[in-house]
Length: 175
Image (cartoon, rainbow, N blue to C red):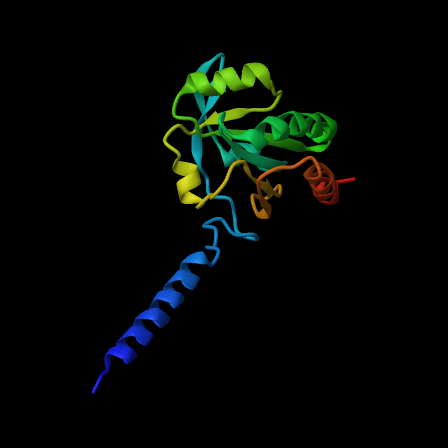
């Protein structure tokens, strides 16, 4: 015979287990050591969506993919620093590729007028990439090796991240 006390205890245990399960971090759809899926997105060219770009276009280079949005506070710090890093390591086969996920192109353009970058910016206004990769915060970045394999993933940005990023890039670039 099931008592009311047993039912309450069972309900509490299930509830606690469910809450604990919901608070566990979820695995990203894009895992370290896996190949970067060949996503096709338009390149921001002269203030509009231009030619299509795929990750295969960057094979042979070490690529830092930075997914960002104009409303992202840490992106305001990250993008100028990434621009410096790209200009420093670019001659050695390194590239930064930004993926903007704003709904409105005007928001991205306004942001880029305040925080200009020299590297390619791809457009993903429907947020397909963040959904496919299960991105949970902005910015989220990936370091992709010359063969297209994910070496590193990072969410968020603080000034102290710059040295770690630089060290990772240096370790994976040819001498």
